[in-house]
Length: 326
Image 1 (cartoon, rainbow, N blue to C red):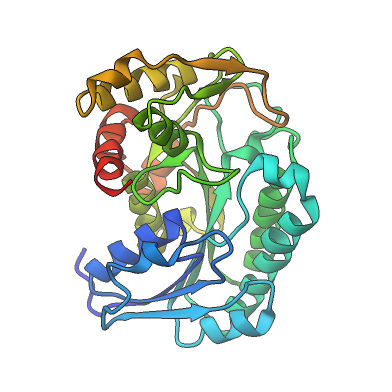
Image 2 (image 1 turned 120 degrees about the vertical axis):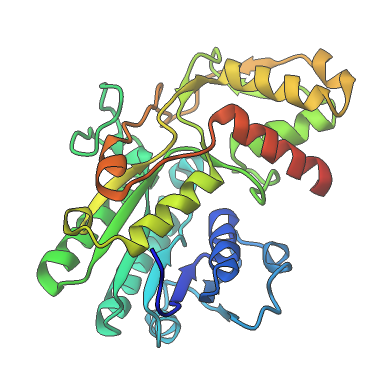
């Protein structure tokens, strides 16, 4: 598909892990990219490779302020909304702030996008929306009750997006991310994701702590698969693909024990001592879903999604990046 003109894209949360990867990718494709971030969880160092790019602009602002949202969407064709407070444990500890950012902030962005008449609003939804639904693989139309304040906020996002599509004609597409990992994902902090956290610990010859017996499983999804989905959602001309949600995953699952086995194997190529690091086990975490596996048939059929990176392939890429940057 040849694009006649390049687009102007707003990436909210563009200094975060996923957002900064999206900024970098779309700049490489010749688009104008604006990043809106308040740096609550994003990092300036995630922007350093393109901060001076002629097509890039940074707006320091907060999605909880409607005026910041209205300012950011001026002249924008597409919004890729990644800004959110992630982490189930964080939401259990502080549900009010999680709701302020993830629900009120989301509504501000929807309203500003509607008023600015942007072409399409693509947003980060979450696999946590499946809640206590037992069935595997997870299919978009079958969800359960949310198991955390975070999951509630991400489900409310889907409801608001649907209403804005029906009521105001704003085109929306939600991407239910499944355990995304890869370059630029922060290994530090109380709410660090499991893969970068374990990588950093193993590199320091520290024992990772697995919550539970290690048999919980996840559909770990490499960042480049997520970038592909965002691009497909942004450019699709298929009317059946608009105003709906898609699982964004690889379509396979691995246990946490499997994950640690791969990490030790691949990291041992850099330092053989890592193979001997012991693994520790602790209690299960509140709000955690035991098993997660996505059906990606809907995305394949309606968007032409074709994920290129399995967990193992993605881990090799990510570990190479962490070894050079940590």
